[in-house]
Image (cartoon, rainbow, N blue to C red; front, side, top):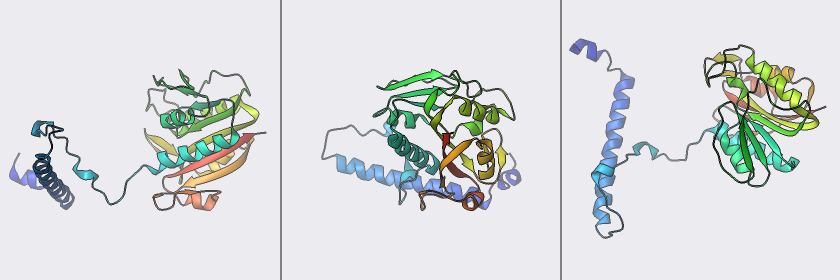
Length: 254
């Protein structure tokens, strides 16, 4: 590579990242040396350079977390505890939700890609959201969270289908029992497709898709929710101002 070609790559952003990496690796070396010196007073472990596993970027002033995937399962667990069903059925939500919930309520988990997760009170099977293997109006407590937005985009090996999400929603409504509860979560904001990761819906779209169900609660996880947490009983206007919020809908079938 010619020097002039290489210099084109040295942008301020590239230089900043490179210097940051060098600085943090220097801190790692300094910490390694200090720990090695201090550990000479203890023989509990062997400290070998070949066993190093640098985690230099974890020195943050606060603990970071994914606001969507911490807050929405926490929201859902509290509702299921309030409902207190004999069994809860979850379709393709984050595994941690079913795993934690199964500590006090029997859970049946279904996913397009079956999972070998072994816990008491938890069963797992394969299911396609566009063709659920349940009878009409048969499930009293149901959740499908941060899943429908992926349907039809091919991300998880499913067939390309622009309306696959609508088919999935139709299936959720079909199998939900009359008087049954559905916890439904999707990205909320200005409608768009981020192919092939997910879709982002507007509040009005979701309400229209579930117009034959009663909305019992709508809560919202905002952009940058580390400082805001969950906004309970949020408004449409607040939802419309998000780029990638997380809409948490509690529906009840009439």
